[in-house]
Every structure is written in C-alpha cells, then in structure tokens.
Length: 160
Image 1 (cartoon, rainbow, N blue to C red):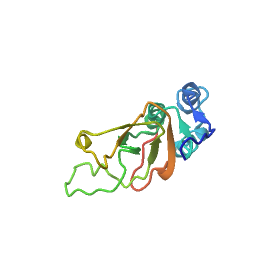
Image 2 (cartoon, rainbow, N blue to C red):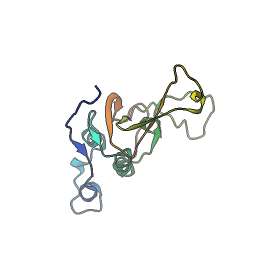
Image 3 (tube, rainbow, N blue to C red):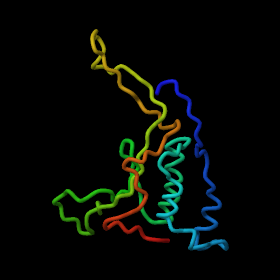
Image 4 (cartoon, helix red, strand yellow):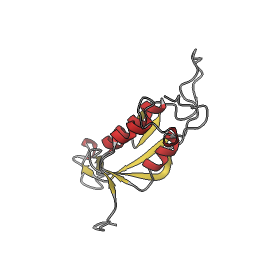
C-alpha cells in the first residue's frame, strides 16, 4: 500500500573475517561443521529479508562461491548459479553442458525505483505508460518466490 510504513531489519554488513576464520582450511579456527555452504546460504539469504544493496548481497555470495567452488550470474532480478537451468542446446560440448539442472537462485525486488517516460511514449496525449528503473544500489528484498539456496540436478560445486 502506498504511504504505508514498515519497520524491518536490514542486512548492512557481513563479518568476512569470522567467515574466513571458520571456513578456511589454513585457519587455526577452521571448523568443517560450520562450513556446510548450502545450509549457510539458506541461513544468510532468507526470503523476506532486506539487504542494503544488491552489491552487498553479491559480495557476500561471491565469498561463499569462492569457498564452495562455483560462480553466479545476474539475470535481471535474479542471482543464479551459472549452471542454473536445463540444457536446451543441441551442441555437443567436450566437457559437457554448462547448464546442469541447478536450482540455486535468489530472486530480488528493488525497493527503490524511478519512473520515467520512455521515448516511445513522448508526444502521446492519451494513455501514456510510465516505465520504472530499479535502483540496485538502494535496499533490496529477497523474495520467497523462485528463491532456492541449494544446488541440485547435476550441479556439484567442488569444495575447497
């Protein structure tokens, strides 16, 4: 609803030092029980939570990716494992298809958007339709719809 005020918790930073202390094999504080990255991702990237920006969320995800051994891609409002989806090509790649049926995806909603009138609508008098540009450097919300923080299918990220 417009002009409705909500009070919610927002993720504004991440304790990278603690993460590396507990999840780097070379660390004296290494604890393999704390480094189940799928469980960690489910705890960190909870649907309904607000994040300071997509950039912060992506930086935290990149730290997990590096330790777990995979890569992500940004596709509009989703951040996905680069092996997301099913193979739809007939090409025969020597090392196999990149798409491996992975389900890891984080669906984001930008909380700040700017409306503008596209060039195609300028000069029209009736029924002008505005477009909206998302501000990804502003707060974002993780949506429950389409968010899945586990790798599946034939996607098996390699461990450190």
